[in-house]
Amino acid sequence: MNADKLTKILEDHRKWVTSDGGQKANLWRANLGGADLREANLRGADLGGANLREANLWIADLQGADLRGANLRGADLRGANLRGADLRGADLQGASLRHTKGVKVFLLGAHSGYVYRYKEVSYLQIGCIHHSLEHWLENWKTIGEDNNYTEAALHNYGLQIQLLANLKWED
Image (cartoon, rainbow, N blue to C red):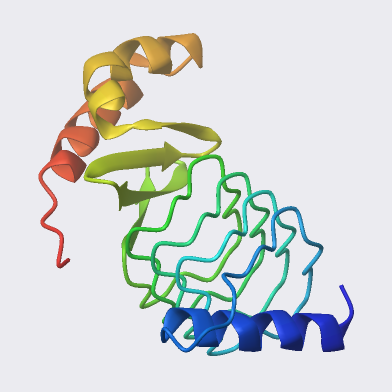
């Protein structure tokens, strides 16, 4: 997407967010790889399936944004607001999530992962496996066995998933 078109979309979206006319940003499947979106107001925007690989989203407001299936590999999301964003199927591998609001990042065994809430449901991604936290709690052992985890790893994952289920959210 060219810079002029993106600037126009962001300005119209800013107006929409502040109830000053404008239009909600529709960036569904947009190619925004490497884009400089520092401090952008993308609250409630449609970014489903968008390529945001290596994008700079430092301190961006993505609250309530639709990021389903978005490619956020290597994106800089430090300080971004992701509260209520729909991250189902999003690829956050290698993304910088330090001080991000609405996502809790952790190391679980040999895998990195994250937990987030969308419409009062908590979701957990461990490595490349993504389910609701409720599904993980009910099926962690089967998921681990299907992925050839040792008994010791299964036990450790089960305990850690239960701890994640007890996280308190600041929303």
